[in-house]
Amino acid sequence: MNDPLIIGGHTFNSRFILGSGKFSLEMTKAVIENGGVEMATLALRRANTGGEENILDYMPEGITLLPNTSGARTAEEAVRIARLARELGCGDFVKIEVIHDSKYLMPDNYETIRATEILAKEGFIVMPYMMPDLAAARALENAGAAAVMPLGAPIGSNKGLLTRDFIKILVDEIKLPIIVDAGIGRPSQACEAMELGAAAVMANTAIATAGDVAVMAKAFKLAVEAGRMAYIAGPGRILEKASASSPLTGFLES
Image (cartoon, rainbow, N blue to C red; front, side):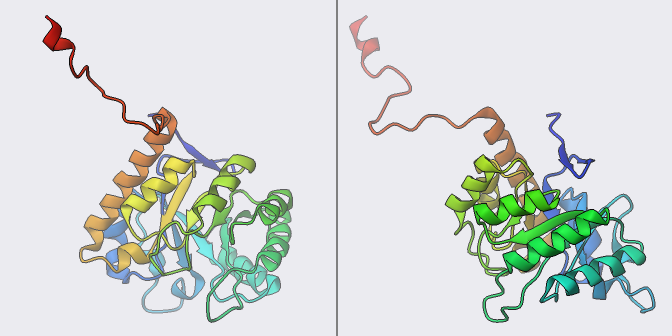
């Protein structure tokens, strides 16, 4: 299908985004290639140009880097990290994460909105990670976000689409791409998110903790593609009563 994903004026053929934080550097390239990934996150601490090992050296050519502001507890800290990532040559994309709750790791929507507004004015392509709240999503849209990234479940939990109904509201009401991030634990859950109308899915822990991470990356790729195709095709109707797909008794009358 000719069905590109457009974020901040950039075109992507893949709707599967990789969170690379939990992979060994050696596995990063294999997972990206098996997953057909065109965009991958990276934490600034792993892009240390002065260190012996640099994640940038393991990213395949042509990958769009999505630096995240992991570790930021305020909007100001997130802005500082984003600016440093740009100076290191990571580009203009940035995933805003503002989390000061160390127990549940829930994003702070208010601080995220503030950071988004500042960075969007500086020309960043801002993709904020947020709790799926319609008012906050509208505020992010008005602040200049290029996409909205609601969590499916608590980060790293692999529990799936616990926020399913709220994500559907965002899909229906927000014009920006809705990218489900955090909590997706199975390819089937990624497929379900895409069937809801999500523009893309990001996964990290589900793949990093799999028995064969490269094969699981391929499974997620196929699941995301299948879910997108199903959404475009339009789901079949749901009936309260059974309805036979073929005549049950007509052949007996001849």
